[in-house]
Amino acid sequence: MQPGPIIGMVVALGAIIIGNALEGGHASSMVGGPAALIVLGGTIGAVLVQYPMSTCMAALRAAGGTFKPPPQDANALVEEIAGYAQRARREGILSLEKVAETASDPFLRKALTMAVDGVDSQSLRDTLEVAIAQEEEHGEDGAKVFEAAGGYSPTIGIVGAVLGLIHVMSNLSDMGAVGKGIAAAFVATIYGVAIANIVMLPLGGRIKLRVREQAHVREMTLVGVLAIQAGMNPKLVRDRLAEFIHSDGHAKAAGGAAPARAPG
Image 1 (tube, one colour):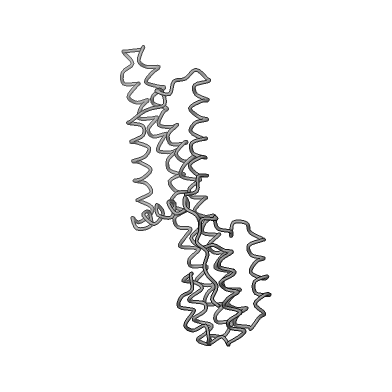
Image 2 (cartoon, helix red, strand yellow):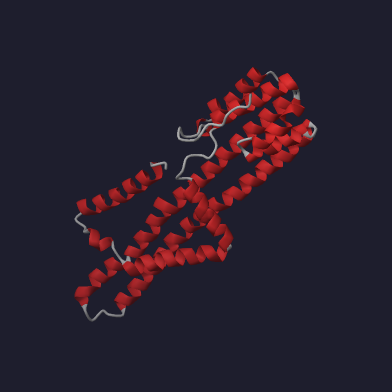
């Protein structure tokens, strides 16, 4: 698991709690069950109005996936593609027909299969670029769900605050409780703003970043397969693909990812 998101959330929440204490506040003043229910329930409900349940569930899975290392080690993928290039250069591209089925990445497997089947380079490029664009578009749906939640939660927090003020104003006979009631009413606003800016919007941004990283790896794979199809020297194939990694540090996977073996 990547610790960055957890550390970031803990730092943000800790800074808010410590800052509140330094200003003379108490942590208990920031706790409000009804406020949390209003903000969380209202935000979830609003998101479900905008997006179907299947999209929301996919967004949750995508968010969970950002806490894990990328599924594909870009460095290992470069070596795997270079291995295919070496074999195709030595034995011909048709020699990849069987080994293509064992490719570590489904997109690479599809691209190699098309190349072996004799699809011309332009058609191969056009088809796979459409696939990359569609995958990127669908992947960003999850980010849009969290961005929508980040937009709704502050507004729902204001609704919670107004409801609390209405309750306070209806009991003005007890002036001693008015101050406490007003303070408690604004807890919902704090929840709404905090949830949006510490959880929802950052998670949406993480999903977008992961989707772009995946699209970058797909583009690298496409360039590699086209180079194999063109009969390019395996060393040049490796050098060309390495530029994708050098130009975008995000393409490098975490060290825990299992490397793929290049075919002999």
